[in-house]
Amino acid sequence: MKRIIYFTIITSLLYSCNVQNTNPEKSLDEVSSFISSQFDFFTNSSLELAKNTFSDDAILIGTDEAEYLSGWSEIEPSIVGQLAIKNPKFETRDLNIIMSDGGDMASYTQVLDFTFTVGEDSGEINNVRNSGVVKKINGEWKVVQIHWSIGVQGQAVEYDY
Image (cartoon, rainbow, N blue to C red):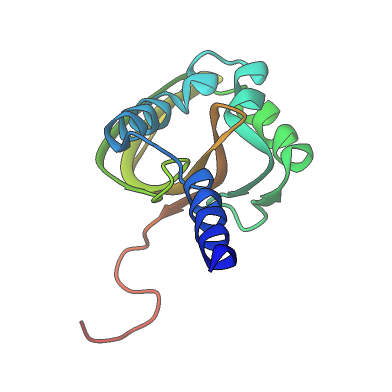
Protein backbone atom coordinates (compact mmCIF):
# COMPACT_ATOMS: atom_id res chain seq x y z
CA MET A 1 0.00 0.00 0.00
CA LYS A 2 2.85 2.37 0.83
CA ARG A 3 4.33 1.77 -2.61
CA ILE A 4 1.10 2.86 -4.27
CA ILE A 5 0.98 6.03 -2.16
CA TYR A 6 4.65 6.84 -2.90
CA PHE A 7 4.14 6.13 -6.59
CA THR A 8 1.08 8.41 -6.69
CA ILE A 9 2.89 11.23 -4.88
CA ILE A 10 6.00 11.00 -7.06
CA THR A 11 3.92 10.84 -10.24
CA SER A 12 1.94 13.90 -9.16
CA LEU A 13 5.13 15.81 -8.38
CA LEU A 14 6.66 14.97 -11.73
CA TYR A 15 3.58 16.13 -13.63
CA SER A 16 3.28 19.33 -11.61
CA CYS A 17 6.93 20.20 -12.30
CA ASN A 18 6.35 19.90 -16.03
CA VAL A 19 3.44 22.37 -16.15
CA GLN A 20 4.32 25.81 -17.46
CA ASN A 21 2.31 28.65 -16.03
CA THR A 22 1.99 31.00 -18.98
CA ASN A 23 -0.16 34.05 -19.36
CA PRO A 24 -1.74 33.64 -22.81
CA GLU A 25 -2.66 37.33 -23.11
CA LYS A 26 0.87 38.43 -22.21
CA SER A 27 2.37 35.96 -24.71
CA LEU A 28 0.01 37.14 -27.45
CA ASP A 29 0.89 40.79 -26.73
CA GLU A 30 4.62 39.97 -26.85
CA VAL A 31 4.24 38.08 -30.13
CA SER A 32 2.12 40.84 -31.70
CA SER A 33 4.71 43.42 -30.72
CA PHE A 34 7.57 41.31 -32.08
CA ILE A 35 5.81 40.63 -35.38
CA SER A 36 5.05 44.35 -35.74
CA SER A 37 8.72 45.19 -35.17
CA GLN A 38 10.32 42.32 -37.11
CA PHE A 39 11.11 44.58 -40.08
CA ASP A 40 12.78 47.28 -37.96
CA PHE A 41 16.17 45.97 -39.09
CA PHE A 42 15.12 46.83 -42.63
CA THR A 43 13.77 50.31 -41.89
CA ASN A 44 16.84 51.06 -39.72
CA SER A 45 19.24 49.41 -42.21
CA SER A 46 20.81 47.41 -39.37
CA LEU A 47 22.48 44.05 -39.91
CA GLU A 48 22.86 43.70 -36.12
CA LEU A 49 19.09 44.10 -35.61
CA ALA A 50 18.53 41.51 -38.35
CA LYS A 51 20.83 39.05 -36.60
CA ASN A 52 18.85 39.58 -33.39
CA THR A 53 15.56 39.07 -35.26
CA PHE A 54 16.34 35.64 -36.76
CA SER A 55 17.26 32.45 -34.93
CA ASP A 56 20.57 30.87 -35.90
CA ASP A 57 18.73 28.05 -37.69
CA ALA A 58 15.97 30.15 -39.27
CA ILE A 59 14.49 29.32 -42.67
CA LEU A 60 13.69 32.14 -45.11
CA ILE A 61 11.59 31.39 -48.17
CA GLY A 62 11.48 34.43 -50.44
CA THR A 63 9.67 35.34 -53.62
CA ASP A 64 12.66 34.63 -55.87
CA GLU A 65 13.23 31.07 -57.06
CA ALA A 66 16.66 30.88 -55.39
CA GLU A 67 15.45 32.24 -52.06
CA TYR A 68 15.26 29.15 -49.91
CA LEU A 69 17.78 30.05 -47.24
CA SER A 70 18.56 27.86 -44.26
CA GLY A 71 20.41 29.23 -41.24
CA TRP A 72 21.82 32.67 -40.51
CA SER A 73 24.96 31.97 -42.58
CA GLU A 74 22.76 31.72 -45.72
CA ILE A 75 20.32 34.46 -44.71
CA GLU A 76 22.95 37.09 -43.84
CA PRO A 77 24.27 37.72 -47.40
CA SER A 78 20.70 38.17 -48.64
CA ILE A 79 19.96 40.65 -45.85
CA VAL A 80 23.18 42.58 -46.59
CA GLY A 81 22.06 42.95 -50.23
CA GLN A 82 18.54 43.97 -49.24
CA LEU A 83 19.80 46.65 -46.84
CA ALA A 84 20.88 48.63 -49.93
CA ILE A 85 17.17 49.37 -50.42
CA LYS A 86 16.38 52.84 -49.08
CA ASN A 87 13.26 54.24 -47.42
CA PRO A 88 11.53 50.89 -46.94
CA LYS A 89 8.03 51.20 -45.55
CA PHE A 90 5.74 48.33 -44.63
CA GLU A 91 1.98 48.68 -44.25
CA THR A 92 0.53 45.49 -42.79
CA ARG A 93 -3.03 44.23 -42.45
CA ASP A 94 -5.03 41.08 -41.73
CA LEU A 95 -2.64 39.81 -39.05
CA ASN A 96 -3.65 36.40 -37.74
CA ILE A 97 -1.68 34.76 -34.92
CA ILE A 98 -1.98 31.20 -33.63
CA MET A 99 -0.22 30.67 -30.27
CA SER A 100 1.16 27.35 -29.10
CA ASP A 101 -0.34 25.94 -25.91
CA GLY A 102 2.94 26.57 -24.10
CA GLY A 103 2.98 30.23 -25.16
CA ASP A 104 6.55 30.04 -26.46
CA MET A 105 5.85 29.65 -30.18
CA ALA A 106 3.40 31.18 -32.63
CA SER A 107 2.58 31.07 -36.31
CA TYR A 108 1.23 34.08 -38.14
CA THR A 109 -0.04 35.31 -41.47
CA GLN A 110 -0.46 38.83 -42.74
CA VAL A 111 -0.70 40.83 -45.94
CA LEU A 112 1.52 43.84 -46.55
CA ASP A 113 2.30 46.60 -48.97
CA PHE A 114 5.95 47.56 -49.38
CA THR A 115 7.32 50.85 -50.74
CA PHE A 116 11.02 51.54 -51.22
CA THR A 117 13.72 53.32 -53.21
CA VAL A 118 16.57 51.69 -55.13
CA GLY A 119 19.02 54.23 -56.51
CA GLU A 120 16.85 56.96 -58.05
CA ASP A 121 13.85 54.71 -58.62
CA SER A 122 10.88 54.33 -56.29
CA GLY A 123 9.10 51.02 -56.07
CA GLU A 124 5.93 49.59 -54.63
CA ILE A 125 4.80 46.01 -54.18
CA ASN A 126 1.27 45.44 -52.92
CA ASN A 127 -0.59 42.49 -51.46
CA VAL A 128 2.50 40.55 -50.44
CA ARG A 129 1.57 37.51 -48.39
CA ASN A 130 3.83 36.97 -45.41
CA SER A 131 3.71 34.10 -42.96
CA GLY A 132 6.05 32.62 -40.46
CA VAL A 133 6.79 31.03 -37.14
CA VAL A 134 8.31 32.84 -34.18
CA LYS A 135 9.70 31.20 -31.07
CA LYS A 136 10.84 32.43 -27.69
CA ILE A 137 14.49 31.40 -27.38
CA ASN A 138 16.37 32.25 -24.19
CA GLY A 139 13.68 34.78 -23.29
CA GLU A 140 13.67 36.57 -26.67
CA TRP A 141 11.31 36.16 -29.61
CA LYS A 142 13.02 35.12 -32.85
CA VAL A 143 11.88 34.37 -36.38
CA VAL A 144 12.46 30.65 -36.97
CA GLN A 145 10.68 30.49 -40.33
CA ILE A 146 9.44 33.22 -42.66
CA HIS A 147 7.77 32.92 -46.04
CA TRP A 148 6.96 35.58 -48.62
CA SER A 149 4.74 35.13 -51.66
CA ILE A 150 3.19 37.29 -54.32
CA GLY A 151 0.04 35.96 -55.91
CA VAL A 152 -0.17 35.49 -59.64
CA GLN A 153 -3.09 36.86 -61.58
CA GLY A 154 -5.58 34.11 -62.30
CA GLN A 155 -4.72 30.58 -61.26
CA ALA A 156 -1.31 28.95 -61.50
CA VAL A 157 -3.12 25.60 -61.70
CA GLU A 158 -6.68 25.57 -63.04
CA TYR A 159 -9.32 24.13 -60.72
CA ASP A 160 -12.88 24.99 -59.68
CA TYR A 161 -13.50 26.62 -56.33
